[in-house]
Amino acid sequence: MAEAKEKWVEIILSTPPELTDALSNFMVELDTQGVFQEENEPDAFNNPEPPAREIVKAYLPAGPEVDTRLQALNNYIDSLSALFPDLDKPGFTTSTIVDPDWGEQWKKYFKPIRVSKDIIIKPTWERYTAEGRDVVIDIDPGMAFGTGQHPSTCMCIVALEDIFLKDRSQDTWNVLDIGTGTGILAICAAKLGADRVKAIDIDQKAIEIAGVNIAINDVDDRIELIGGDIANFDDTFNLIIANLTAATLIDLHPHLIPMLEPGGYLVASGIIDQNRENIERIFLSGDLELHDLKSEREWLCYIFQRRKNDS
Image (cartoon, rainbow, N blue to C red; front, side):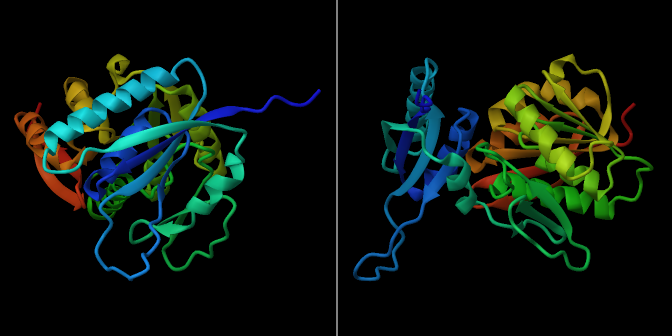
């Protein structure tokens, strides 16, 4: 008997370039398996102007949850259009495809990249010769998003490197990575010098992928993987990493602050510029002060620090 072939729903988004990253990030949150930006071919007249629209492709396993996720995408596009009325509204089409060779297709989108001064992220199937102080992190993302190439992840890694390099006041580093995904940020923290890392995610598939990557990088003695919600935590940390979304960060704010020790850092990323005012209003209204702010295109990464005179 012939083996049954898997069916997938291909989503092809057409969007103004200014909204590409926001839509790509949202597609990740929908648990799509593979989010790729299609490269634009130069036109026949070698026009140097940027294209009016860009194409983003994403894929969902065919099943009963597809309609719900597509409706969520429709709602998000409506909200983007309301926030950016001067831009053309994004749109998308869908089609069903059968048994694409994702295992091989994904690899052409993921090459070794230097994401900070010393951190190199590379796929397990690529070779890379470390030089000088290079810290090489091997990642096998499967079909999950989380290869360190997104601006929000890159900025988190740069922030972690800055903190570990410059702050010598901590005897030990106890780290919490919220929404660990493929485990990149937890692995970075461990390789940069963290003594203990708790990596949490509500997605069991992410926990499984992160577990593989943590073992590949030989840091499983310092990283504990936890499936669940941080609302159930009562531990404290001197470094919390939260590469999420502005809405999720705001929802988690009441839980984050009690878990952060005086003098500890909160690295909050996954924020687009339009949410700057809300993030700063909520996070800078109490125990936190702004230690640093990093930006890349419309993405922001905040490094907050809890005041040391708090009791």
